[in-house]
Length: 146
Image (cartoon, rainbow, N blue to C red; front, side):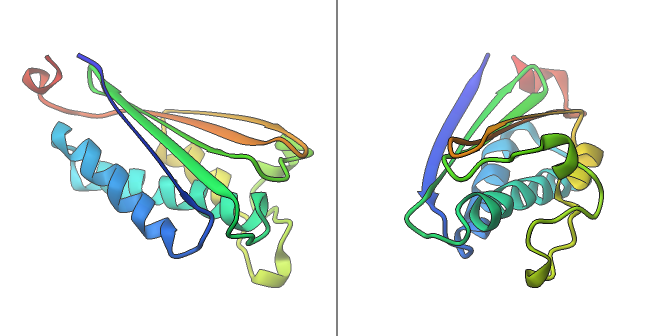
């Protein structure tokens, strides 16, 4: 059985923790391990922070959209914004690359997402925004998937 949820919120830095906790609460029904839960919360934080800081350049008028689906032990998280987009996705995915060095950004967001998730897809177009699709298989009891 597939179960889904969607949220949207203003591109404010204080909403990053809201996003992280909301996604974690939704997937808690799968009884993930603490490591799995921590990894998913970290990935959501990274993607949402990227949308707020890079996508909207800190403009709180922007909206961040998250959808989460769980099915057969898989979690799919889609985080989307309608911000400035990424002009060079391959460059943005390089460790230590950041467009905001003045904010002391580490440039490790995509690297962290790639290490903690089984799959990551990034779609982006300048001036149209970015979509990040993340997938992870959880080591859950089979009975919970039915």
